[in-house]
Structures are given as structure tokens and as C-alpha cells.
Image (cartoon, rainbow, N blue to C red):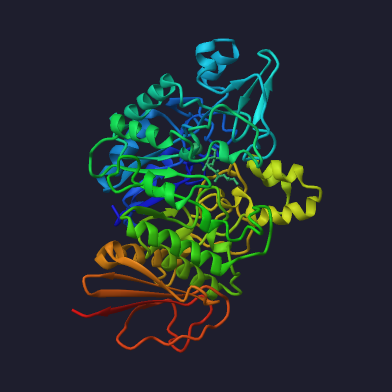
Length: 531
Ligand code: TEU
Ligand code: CA
């Protein structure tokens, strides 16, 4: 499993086959040759289920139906069978912490059906918890004189997993998609499903009342036992909000009786000043290294599989993050350095669409261009529109959601018409067309790196160790296996760093021909063998 590569497709923005401005399943089928060339193993599709799209599909109104925006069940079946011809397996994104308030269950609850009210959390009292998207997490329904819980948008009502009937329904959904040939799942915010009871007010924003709650491991073991295929190719990834290493060692334990691997986000909060997302121009490099080292070492020691990732649809683009590159050459080196620094660690590599092209942040200069509910809520709650726009340029989730840049046309070859979300505001945007045949491009490098890892057992199975965690510029780690060592040295900064290759090491790769110290964003892969 440690050798696998997952590629995340944000379906809405990948490829639009019928020119309505919205990416679709048939569009993914058209691009299977592109995906196969990258030599990835799994395609994780963000939710394609029926949804009012208040949170871009993370608000599901029918777990059995494909949203017509994306196509039909026939398209999905075709994708599964066509992908198989290329050796690619499909993973779906299951949003089980909540449903859309348009879901039949919630609608029945609203109409007064107490059976379905028990599918959610309805309460006569309200509590002071905050929604992750801003504002209160308990919403009042006058007709019932009750409040219901929504940890995200108010159209995303939290499901009551303590109700056996709810878990049974969710198991049915999982089994249905497995029967269609789905080979894995990503479970959205799965560590929030077990809430502490009885409810009470929080001293903070409420998160201690539901994060890694009392029965979460029991519920995941049950889901695993009753539903998961024992197919060796089957993969489950849990998305975990504000979790801990200790809990993750349980979620992804090596018996695999819960999940196979875990997404956790501490390393992507190192540019949150004082832990607060909506801030600018801050990057704690030493903090980043310590987080990566802590997690990697614990997971290595306990034989637990980590998910390695820099980006997803909730994150700004990694090419625009951390220290800025000053020239195109530096940007290209930075993209490669970031890929080396992350994907040669121990775990499943998870690449987000467009990362392999070095796509940058949206850089939208007007608020009307934003679509993301969280970004709009933030803007509306901030006193200074100019400052909040600048912050959105760095932190908005829409930065990661602009369309794939297939070519250099107005809409990047994504569609013939204006896409649902505006394209990146930039002068010369990196595109597949420009990079396809350029051996020095970010795209060519991703292909090289994926292939390199697959060929080198030490980079897959090797133990990991870290050096000089206090160094202000360099991130250094080694992977060791059967007498072989790979040493990875990355200059994370836009300044030259002093470094001398140690005796006995052979250079496997450098993203620059320079070997006198390390240029800005230079990275080395070195090898030493005692065999
Ligand atoms: O995200 C969970 C989550 O908590 C975040 O990454 C969230 O976007 C961040 O806290 C905001 O600052 C998952 C999905 O990936 C996201 O797209 C959904 O909006 C969310 O769950 C609700 O389903
Ligand atoms: Ca379309």
C-alpha cells in the first residue's frame, strides 16, 4: 500500500465534456490517457452525488444518485470500466458526517416525523458551538421550536451516528457503491461523527465536544467489518479534522480494522498566524519540519500508513504557498523541491489535480469572483473589505478550485464556455500543452518522481529519519532499507544555502546543475549503499 499514488480529481473543475462550464464524469473519461501516463493507481473523485451544491457536493441530498451536473450512473459505470483498462481504480468521497437539508431524511424530520428527527440532532436547547464556516452551529426551526446541529453550513445537518438506523443506512450506501466496482473511499471529516452526550456548552468553539469522540473507533470498526471488501486493492482514507497522532495510530492501525490511511492537516497550518487561518504572510518553517518529523516518526514506528499531501480542494495551491519564488526558473525549482520534500517520505502519495502543472492561486481581485461559502462568510464578517480580499488571495479555498490548465486558450481547454468559477488571474499560466514535451517542466518531473519512488524499495518501505530540524533553510531526511540509504536535502527558502554533499553519497537527482551550495529551492536526492 505504501507504494500507491492517489490522484484527487475535483470533478467540477477537471474537464467539461459537454461545454456547460462544469466539469463532468465523461470529461474524466476523456482524460484517462493523461492520468495513466502519470502512473497513478487511484482516482479519488470529490462528491458526484445529487446535491444542491451549497458546499460543492459536500451537501449530499441522495447518496445513490449522481448529480445530473456531473452526468449519470451510466457515465460512472463507464468510467469504472474504462479506468480499469488503464490500470486505474476509482475511489468515491463519502460525506457521512452530515447530509444536505434537502435530503429526504431531513425533509421528513422537518415535517414532524420523529423517526427521522432521530437521524439528526434536534434539541430544545441551543449550545454555544461555532460552525466551521463561521456563525452558530445550532440553527432554530420555528415550526418545531427546536434547534438542529450543523458543524458546517446550515444546509449541512449533522447525522446522529448513535442511532443504529442511521449507521445501517450508511452501510447500505457503502455496499451499493462497492457492488458497482468502486475500489476505495475517502471519508469526509470522519472523526467528527461521534458526539459527546449529553450536549453542553463549550469553553472554546465546541470542537472538544465532537472531535475524535467516544464511539468513533467502534463505529469505524463496525463499518469496516460489515462493509469493506477484503480485496487487497481496496483503500480507505479518513479525512480527520483537528486530530492527534495518538488517535491516528488507531484510525489507521496496521491490522486495518478501521481505515487504511489518514489525512491530517497540522502541517498545513504552519502559515496560520497564532493558529488562525485568516491571516497573511507568515510561515513557520521550523514548525513545519517538526510537525512532519513527529508524525512520520510515530507512524513509521507503529507501522501505520500516512497520506502524503500538500494540497486539496480546501487548500490554497502549494505552488503559491510558503516562501515566494522570484522568477519562473525559481518557481519551477520550487515546485519540484516541494514534490521531493513531501512524496519521498513514508506513505501513500496524494496528488491534487493541477499540482503536477504547478497551477497557482486564483488571485481574484474582486469579491464577486469567489464562490466558496466559507470564503464569502469570512468576507462578510470582516470589517475591512480591502484587507479581507488580500487574505482571501492567500487563504481562500477557491484558490485550489479553479479549472485544470490543459492549454493556453481563454478557458484553458477546460470548456468552450466560461467555467463555473473564473480562471486564475495570471499573465502566463502554466499549462499541460506547454509542459508536455519539456523534459525540464514541473509536469515531466512529477512523472519522473512517481516512477522513481515505485522503482526504489527504500523510498517505499524504508524507515525514515530526520536531521538538523533547527536548520533555518534546509529540510533533510533519509530513508533506509536493506543497507541502502536515500538522503533528501531541500532548500525551502528563496536564498542560497550552504551545503556540501557528504562523502560516500552519489547524486541521483538535482533540480539544478549547480552543485556548489544549494540555490534557492534547490533539492537533491542522494544515494549511499553499503551492499
Ligand atoms: O473539509 C473539512 C474541513 O474541516 C476543512 O478542510 C474545511 O474546509 C476547513 O476547516 C475550512 O477552513 C471537508 C471537505 O473537504 C470540505 O470541502 C467540506 O466543505 C467539509 O468537509 C464539509 O463537508
Ligand atoms: Ca459539463
